Length: 174
Ligand SMILES: Cc1cc2nc3c(=O)[nH]c(=O)nc-3n(C[C@H](O)[C@H](O)[C@H](O)COP(=O)(O)O)c2cc1C
Image 1 (tube, rainbow, N blue to C red):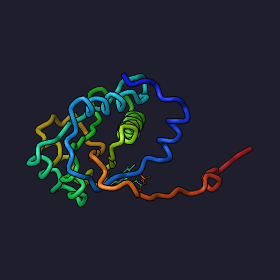
Image 2: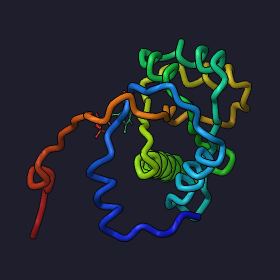
Image 3: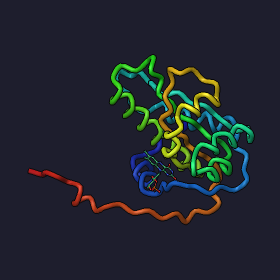
Image 4: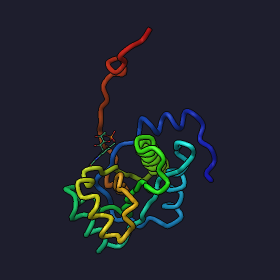
């Protein structure tokens, strides 16, 4: 495992991470992908059931098939690695809690990619075709697609985003 980051590194990564949708030509080594998935799998989960499962797609033909299921096709095709993230219904004990856990796992993956100098984006739009993804990958129907994460070397690093001021988000403070 990587050396533990101190608290300020984590806060910095949370603020500096941006969704990256354009990638440079780059080959991502298997060890790096395993590091991303290991970090993802250290997310919290209800009863520590760890309901997440991953596919790792590098094959251009397979990427192309997945790209055909989303309007983020160019992002999928341009990524070094495409990682569909699933909920395994067989180990699921509470649907909402398990979906929340997979969400935490995806956020870990994004932050880990950022920490390693990579770029990534969470693609949810493809969920309109979630069953097709399972069919194309020839995976069992007990899996439910939660997102596809595209990972690669950012083509540039000037992504911008914004957030509402936190004061607007607090509904009650007593
Ligand atoms: C559930 C979810 C679904 C998303 N789906 C997509 C998507 O389909 N395509 C995409 O480009 N970005 C997608 N995003 C990324 C958001 O657009 C992005 O996080 C948001 O605009 C804030 O930008 P930032 O990540 O750079 O801070 C998704 C994010 C989440 C959490």
